[in-house]
Amino acid sequence: MAKVESGIPHNLRKVYRRLQRWRSLHTGRLPIPERLWAAAAELAREHGIYPTAKALHLEYGKLKQRAEAAGPAVKRRGAKVLTAVPRRALNCGLALLLVPDQLVHRAALARRRYGVG
Image (cartoon, rainbow, N blue to C red):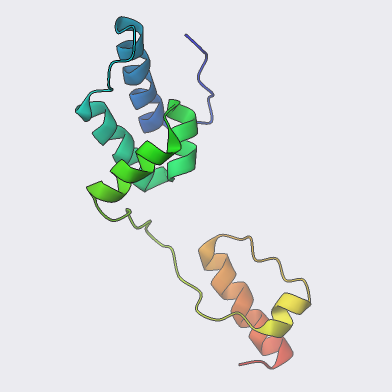
C-alpha cells in the first residue's frame, strides 16, 4: 500500500484507507460500493473535487457528478465574499491571495488609500 501524505486531512485519510482496503480485497473491475462513493462525494463538497479525487485516487469526472448530485457544497464558516475590488488596487499590485477576512480588510484599506469607493 502506498504511503499517505501527512498533509491530508484526517477525514480524507480515513476514507482513503477504506478505499484501499476495498481495492485490496477486490480484484478485477468491480464498481466501487455506493457507500464509499457517498463518503468521497461528501469530502469533495467539503475539500474540493480535484484535491479529493487526487488524494483518493478516484476519477475526477465521476466524483464531480456524484458530488453535484448529492447536494450543494458545504459553505465554510467565516468566509466573506468580496463583491467589488477597486481597479486601482489591482493595478498597484495588491496581493489578493489572502484569507477572506484579510482580503476584505485589505480591499477596504486600498479603497481609503486610493479614494476609490
